[in-house]
Image (cartoon, rainbow, N blue to C red; front, side, top):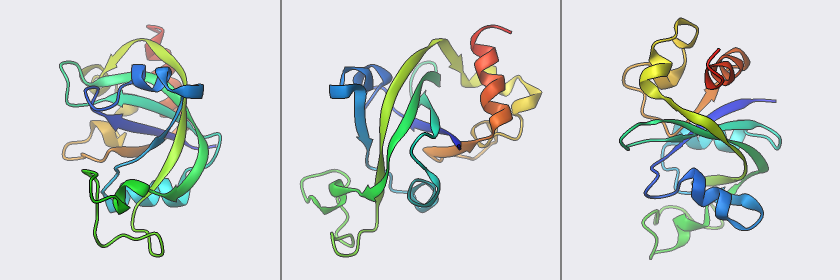
Length: 155
């Protein structure tokens, strides 16, 4: 099993939006970074655990847990000229972009803020806390995953 962190701006799609979806499941579309796409396409597997991270908001941070429930498949928004994620170089025959389906597990007991995450030495190598890393999807090690869950409880 792998562990991940996926970012979304809460005014675009929030943890509450995911929880309100039918079967609390939704596709994670609109990723338009090749490195993030490659992780979704090549590495994410059913059962992988994911932190839901709210970005570009008053208090950026981890707000919930999700699970990958469908492995990568072509991102249909790339084929739709009406979509803000349209890519004329992507087609159903030769898709350039992919998505996975994720399922809501739970909200965290509290927002685990980016500033708090940066304070903890065991997390210093986490891509999220390193300067200049703006990927919307990033791997989380098992040790980092466990440590963050302990932070949630205030331990």
